[in-house]
Amino acid sequence: MQSVRISDHGFLADGRSAALVDRTGAVNWWCPGRFDAPSVFARLLDDGAGHWSIRPDGEFTVSRAYLDDTLVLRTVFTTSDGVVAVTDALALEAGARGHDIGLRSPQVLVRTVQGLSGGVPMRVHYRPRFEYGRVVAYLVERDGTLEATAGAARLTLRGTEPLRCGDGEASGTFTARTGSAHHFTLGYAPTYDAPPPEVPDADRAVADTVAGWRSWVDEHQYDGLYPEQVRRSGLVVQGMTYRPSGAVVASATTSLPEQLGGDRNYDYRYVWMRDFSFTLRALEAAACEVEVQQQFAWVGRAMGRIGEEPVPIMYGVQGERDLTEHRLNHLAGYDDSRPVLIGNDAWRQRQTDIFGEALDAAWWLRDHLDPMGPEVRHLLRALADQAVLNWRLPDAGMWEERGIERHHVSSKVQCWVALDRAVRFGDRLGGPDDVARWARARDEVRAMVLERGWSERLGAYTGALDTDDLDASVLLMPLVGFLPADHPRMRSTVSVVQRRLSDGGLLRRWDGDPAGFVICSFWLVGCLALCGERDEAHELFQQLAGQVNDLGLFAEQIDPTTGEQLGNFAQAFSHIGLINAAGGLTDLDRHGHARGVRS
Image 1: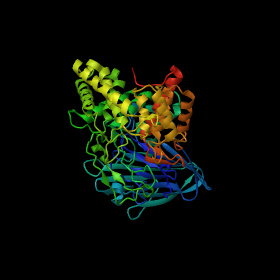
Image 2: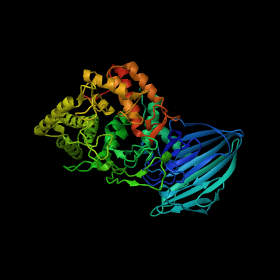
Image 3: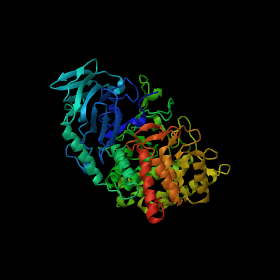
Image 4: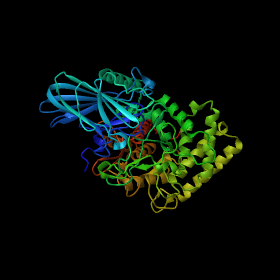
């Protein structure tokens, strides 16, 4: 079994990419430049795929925390010789504050070591491996730096402590004594058509990064319940944002398994339309109004002008559509879980729920879309028309089943959402004939779901029409306004889903799902809140919020038996679920009802 677990990692971000640092002081993941770029450290997926460790040379215990209101991580090692702190940050641009952070980040990983007491022998091991471990770079000492160049990438490492170069790696030792400071700065740049990597002063870079994150928090003052958890989750979502475009990726990693030894190991470093509406709601709940508008603008640019051709369900961070999947057969995978994949062939799938996500987001933001520009109007009209054309078709569903299409209830419900919001927009989107056509299709979808999506045997709505397959995705029905949460059939559905799929508060997506899916569990909180079940909703929220790792981070799933986090990490959708659930509970406590669809 892999000794370092998913939840052992902290998450660093700079508005372009992310790095993961474990409890032993090892950077095991970094894809500099952009989230989906080739890695320079990928030991998370194979011991030989590169890492950079700074740690005591001997036994130690660990405590760690983010510096308040930042994504700057401080790890304190306690040894028999003394105590030492390592501070890690992906640097923000010098002087960047508020909504400007991340736009021009220097692509620099900064690590500082401070002796707190005694004299602690420390060991550094620097082992870059480019392009997911395929390429071993030449290390060259030049002008007080250590340069590594291979293929399209180059790294420059500057440190206050000398390192000895070996075969594609470097190592060294030093002693951290009381009051001593030791600095390491690693800069990335493309090999061609770019200036050399930056290696700024480490102390200044850390201070600027701390100030940058705190300035962003200062501009996003959330005043609802569970502020600490919402603030941390808001920082994670912002850290998952590719700031040049405003796109929010699903996760920082690829191929971390849903089940140890399993093969559902996908690349999540992309942007899903499915996440769009819930992301916008979370950003608004966390007081991120500027980010809300940036997100909507990004979707319009990514989708472009839509006709009758299929609408892509996911994109790269700059709006790329072709995300063809490739296997990295040279990597062993996390805990021997193969395949390791880059790219994601789900981009080829038909998923009809995306129409509802976009139109629901537009309805949520309608005050910001007045007056509505012609490009936005065309986009929303086209998506409503696509819902009319496609709602009767089977699709891969929100869980992206491969090789099979079914009539998923959640997809039909989201088609209903698209048409319902289009009708609500009325003459802002179309003429009387258009609105009448959308309304007819909306009512047909609703009638089909109510008739064929209900299982008398289960006493619940099901995952697919005309089946008895229970699925947690039906919890979206009250959250999007398809049915009131206190409707007898909806109450029964929530009860059955909770009884059959919940394990210790963690909700599996379906019978046989290997672990609890975090956002589904927060959907259950939202349903309970909409039903007015105040105490139960709060109890479940607190139970779920307690499942984070020691830094307040979620992966995609959690094993209810062991508590182990599984799937890609950190997971934006999980944190978005927490923010939206906290917003619903805030509304319930303050106004006597939880947030649902806006009237």
